[in-house]
Amino acid sequence: MNILKAIGAFFVRIGRWIKDTAWVQPLLIVGAIFAVIFSIPSITSWIEGLAEDAKSSEKYYQKFQRSLAGGETSEADKLIADIQDGDAKSSVGDKFFLVFVSEDCSACSESKEAFEELEKRWKSTLAPSSDDLPFKLVSIFTDEETDETTSRETAFQQFLNREGNGEFFSDAALVGRDSYYHLNGHSSESDLDTLEAADPENFLTPTILLIDFSDDYGGVSEVMFGVTGDTKLQKAELLRDCWDHANKFEGKE
Image (tube, rainbow, N blue to C red; front, side, top):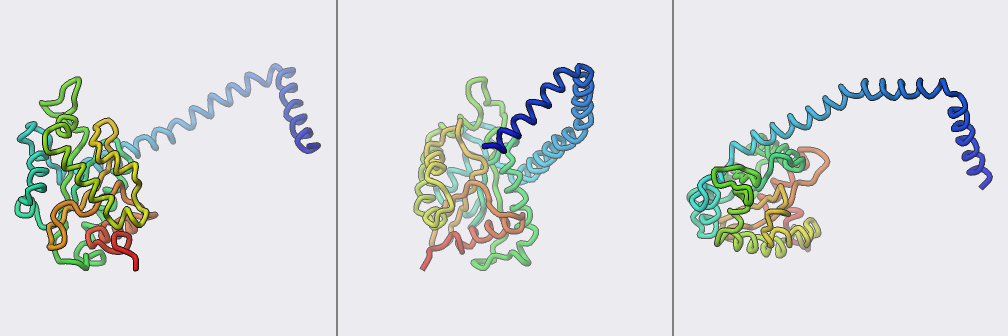
């Protein structure tokens, strides 16, 4: 207690000194102003770096984008219908990642690094052990603006509200709950509840689905919300394990 009182008394004396020494106050104000001015370039560089990361992420995902333009006849709607009917096996491939992203999403940028790293090392150090299929990724932007976008409803809201699409997400949530990834404690019940609700106001990005039409699966086979790991290599390894249904994605003996 005596130490705390001494510390308190010290700061009180400083406060009184500043108050009584009027000439110090303008100097402190000027010093604070210069501190703010000199910090502006660093803050600007930081903001520009974030914007550049977001732009790079957006460009990467756009290479694999299925658009919401066209309403019921959009590429995104056709993709979901094809997955449900099993036609995506021929129109897209036997196995592929489907990721829902948005432009202003830092977790999407982190996932982009993982996908990019996995794609780069697909035929070498990160080659899947379960098959020799090619790397495939499909993206849907939840904040895409189309001719169908109105002041009341975004294109993605309309997409979620269309018949059949809501059922797709509720079925995906059921797969997620039954998956070893969830049972091993790597996804939360609340995130899966959000996926099941298909509520555009709360839809999580990135939402990553592994679509697998191999003998043991018939569509959505794994569900993730972002990619964990300390480095982009570790994150890429997690995606590779997802593809292989291995490690965190397999049952424990």
